[in-house]
Length: 161
Image (cartoon, rainbow, N blue to C red; front, side, top):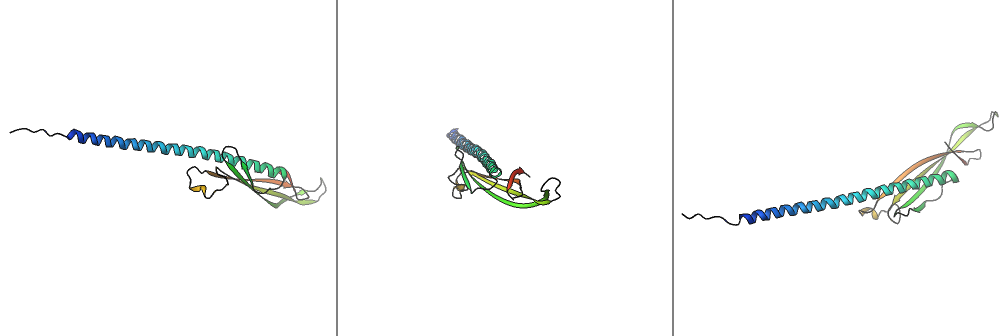
């Protein structure tokens, strides 16, 4: 009886090893791409938040300094982001104040509440409904409320509530 050795098993093992290594390489490349995309989105998100924060601070400064709300304003932040700032004002009365020291005449204390909304995005207009589907589009919004006491004429004085 003649013993025959089987040949070709090494080729099958080599093909399996090559396929497994190729799969690991594809998985590593995909993971790297996903991490880079996530890191980029985190960076853009942080920039958008800071741009929205700057927009609300600018809006509060204008509202409290000018004692009125301006129309919606778009600011170009210079880092690829634009901020749209909206302001609304509402007058209400709370408590009273004495019109003159020891006069005994009390008037209702008027207050003006300013609501400033800043929407920052990395597009030509904020918010950009068409750009939402893009991976690179980032948008953040921030709302701030400020209050100012009114004088006897009913106009805000700039003194915070």
